[in-house]
Length: 223
Image 1 (tube, rainbow, N blue to C red):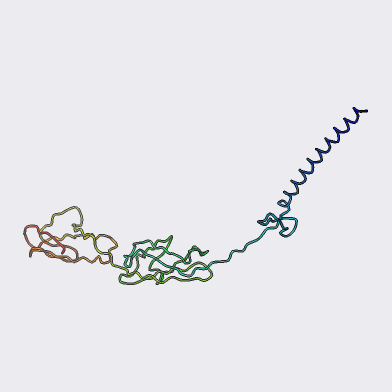
Image 2 (tube, rainbow, N blue to C red; image 1 turned 180 degrees about the vertical axis):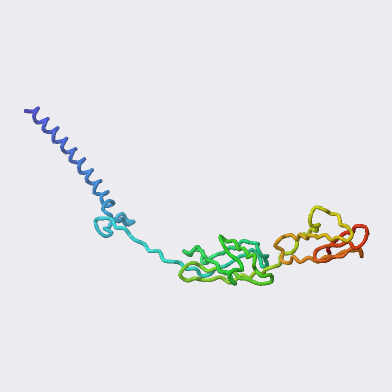
C-alpha cells in the first residue's frame, strides 16, 4: 500500500508542473495576441483597441503644392547671332513644390527654339531684332517667369580669299579674267565685296579684270 501512495504523489506532482507550464504558455500568447488583432499600446504599457479586432489601413491624399515663382537664367547672355545656341535654366519656388517641369515660349514665334534647356537662334532671325523667352510652370496655376530679352547680332566676316576663276593665273593683254571672292563664314550677315585695283594698266568690270596694255602684272587687293 505504501508503494501505491508514492506513485500517486509522483503523478500529482507531474500534472501540477504540466499545468503550470500550460498556464505560462497561455499567458505569453495572451500578451502577444493584441499585435495580431491590431491593438495599439500606450506609452504606459496599457493597451486600447484602435478600432476593431482586425488591423486597419489609413489612406493619405497628397495635395498639389503649386509653383509661386519661376526664374529664368541665361548665364548673362543678352546678345546672340543667328544659328548660335546657348543654355538656359530655371528654378521654381517654393523648393518643395510638387511641380518640376516648365514649358517655354519664344516671341516672336520662329525667332528661336528651345529644347532640353538649349536655345537655338533661327538662321533667318533678323539682325538687330529682339526676341524674348519665357517659362511657365506646368501646373494648375501656370505661373510665368519674367521675359528674358536677346538681341540678334550680325555675323561678321571672318575671312576673305580672292582667286582667279580657273587654273590659269596668267592674264593676257586685251583679255579678261573672272576673279572669285570667297567670304567666310558662308552665312555671314553681309557678304558684299567691294573691289579695288591698283595701276592704270588694269580695269575692273563685273567681277572681271582686264589688262589694257603691256604692263607688269599688278596685284589685286581688297581693303
